[in-house]
Amino acid sequence: MTETKLPPVTQIAVVSFALIVASGIWIVSHLPEHVPLGPSAILIAASALLVATNVVLLLRVRDFDWARFFAVAKWALLAYCVISGMLEWVFIKDGTRGGELAVLTLSLVIFAIHVPLLMGYTVARYPETYD
Image (cartoon, rainbow, N blue to C red; front, side, top):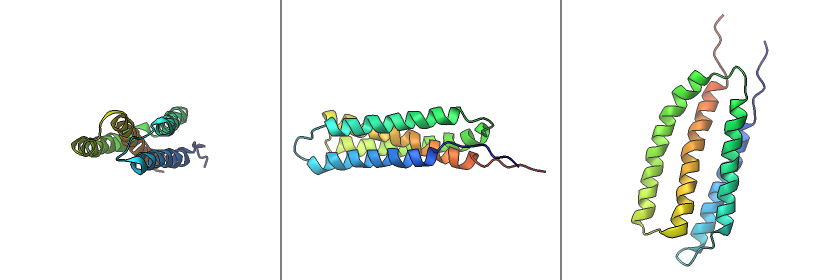
């Protein structure tokens, strides 16, 4: 029995999430005063690059169970878009404006993409075979 060599999607996702959390901590640690957005922007850009890397690495896998991946990922994406939308509403309702809101919004977008990608990958990585 041969197994397809899979990329380190999970490990990359963990690093991406750590960068998002670090960005959020940076912002929160400076509120309610002015937040220097440079470090957060760098962390968000690095996290987005890791998301793109995960997508590219997954697209290069041969014999990946894409049907199962999309069966899980599409519903997870819907759920995480709703969750991210609610969090965005909370940020706006709380009075977050300007650059801080933009950085937090980008964080939520990455969150809403990467979690469903990771869930779909986790389910599809071990295709069922019936003998």
